[in-house]
Structures are given as structure tokens and as C-alpha cells.
Image (tube, rainbow, N blue to C red; front, side, top):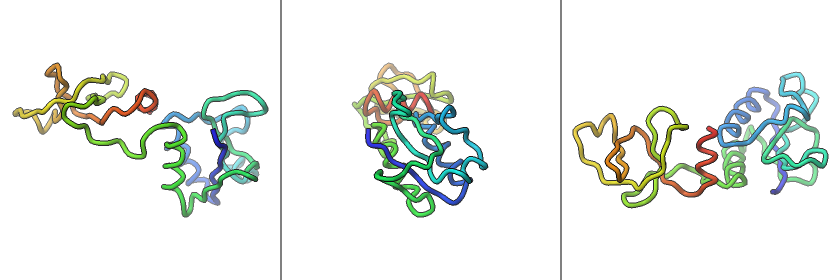
Amino acid sequence: MENFAVKSNSFALYEAFKKDVEAIGWKYNENFTPFSKEQSEYNNCLFFADKWDGEQFPCSFSLSNSSSDVLVFSLETQQGEALAFVKKTYGISEVDKEPIVGEMAIFWDNVEEESIIAIYSEYEHEFKDEYPHEANDGTTYRNAILYESPEQYKAFLKS
């Protein structure tokens, strides 16, 4: 994995970005630096890495002063680009795609952890407004996205 960083003069932007990346599977490394406004005043970026002090950590990040010789995004002007890069690095698609009839999809109602993967079926029923998606077994769901990879599904379950 390529190490990279995001910089901002706003702790609120760090908080929002932290929430976004944690939703797709990244973990904040509290052992390296606690996440607080005070710490952000002493550190110049959120640093994303797979190793901290020689130890392997899958997809983790922390407030840090290390951003030389790595790709750096400014949250003030490149927040969307930075989030797209984080998603790409983690191995999921930029945007969850609409399911396609006959293709695999992830289905769920209100709780992602209770989702299933099945073939997306054509659905014409009187309850289509409330449950617009149908799996090939005839079960209907409120939500569905195109299934793309095991990594996407793992990230989806962590969100």
C-alpha cells in the first residue's frame, strides 16, 4: 500500500474525514496519537499507512507530522479526491452502483449486518415503493447495490 496524508487547518474537516474513512473500513490508530483538537494543533496531517513503528496494521491512520515524500491531499480543496483515493486504496469502488437484473447484488433492509448477496431479479409488485428490490429467491428488500468484490462487501459490513 502507498502511504499518503491529508492536511487541513480545520479540526472539523479532520473529524468529518475520519468518520468517512472509518465507514469504509479504515481504523484510527489511537496508540500512535489520540484523536483530539489539541493533538491536531501539534500535528500537521492525518497520515495513512499499513505499518506503524515497524508493526503491520491493516489500513490505519493517525494524526502525525510525517508527510514528506508521500502523496498529500488538502482537505480544504481536495476532500472528494482524497476520499476517492482512500476508497481506491482500500479496494472498493468510487460509488456504489445500482444493481443490474441478472447480476449479483447486496440486499438489506435497515441493518447492513443482516445483508445477503444474491442475484438481482426484475420486480413488479404492489409494494415496490417500500421494497423496490427483489432477490432471485423472491424476497424483497428496501436497499440493494451491485456486488463487485469480497473487499467491497467487507467494507460495506464495516460501515
